[in-house]
Image (cartoon, rainbow, N blue to C red; front, side):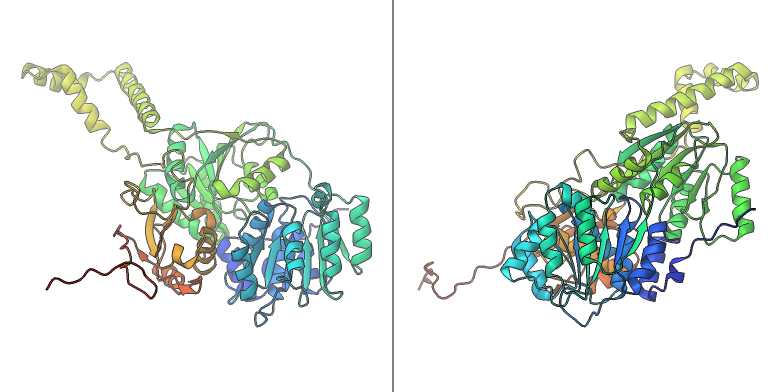
Length: 568
């Protein structure tokens, strides 16, 4: 007896509100992962949930999406509290809430972690943040101070509960859970269920829905996994260089959204790459024609979204590029499985920025392999590669014979031209169509995202923007107490810009300069201009390097500086 597999639901079929669905579409999320499909309906109904799932299965979206959907934005008080074992995970979860909720007007998300300034945290609590994400120690600190009150809490989430037990936070966890209103929804996620966690579950959760997602480690045999550390604005140049020097027969480049699919194809075609798009908006006949062109060598590089590339099996695919990181680690294994099939070998190259290293580790955990970090080829390597290819073309031409050109060359030599000079001129003519080599950031160039605010450092303003980026000036700075994280949050929330694509942030006294991708439409800039940080609108405009004027010193009461008398 054969059974028909049940089709995965779409996010639209999970009863999420339209604002959330619109954001998910923009982010390129098309089909829920297994943990999301099982968890979201239960949380929307208000049920307690115990989820047993590894990191990398998409569990953050599994609780963030439904809890965002149930917020009362008229209430300026904590309604959702998420506890995480580490500051890194807490900040990642907070960033996810901001990303998923960027269409939710009036949403405030606050991170409460050790190592952060209390002033910023207290300010966020006074503003009435509805979503709090923090580590147990700092959350309890605010509870003891009275700055955090849980009276209006609707939901408590424990993320990686077993890890909190391992790190010695179990007493802190019990304290927070016991302070939570009895009618609040409780959601626990844990990769394992040790006895102590089970006792807490049995004591505090009411008739919980138990969801267990088994994550099998996949060896990805035959696939060489590499990692390139690169920020968003330089990824196009990085991809172009790798496509040029790698022994690529055919490749799939995975991006997050259909819009990015179209844009990247256009950019690669301009660089002479034989590329085509494979995204979810293609009808079946066009999809089949595109795949057939790839099989026949009419197309060498497919730019694809996750859903569009599922089930694709083309023997000549030697490389997979993760241009944008996937939604979760399971999606990563599906992506890289497009190469190295049926005993063949393949190469998977992943691009990741500085803020994405935890997600890289999740992928390594699922595959059971560590990615080999590699450097991009520099300009000298690109030129050497091109020279070698041209040398082979010359030798092949010599081997085939080219007597029909000899009369022309003999005539030029008889006219007194040097044979070597003639060869150089003809080589230049033959290679005139080679694409220019773009610029990549120098090592360490993008590491510092905040300056000291002083304006006397040499050449600081003279430094040009990074490749693919434009510098913009916003109207808040040190005098407003602004921090880089606030700017990143505003740009991501209001502008819908992926945090990994935000470049250098240079905070000065009266304003700040941020690097953003060149391709931002006017509508996005308009939304950013209306965003408020530190109580002020950002008023974004392109920065042309005009120096900041020092404020004119004014004499005030109590100023002991003597006035200079006018000369009679």
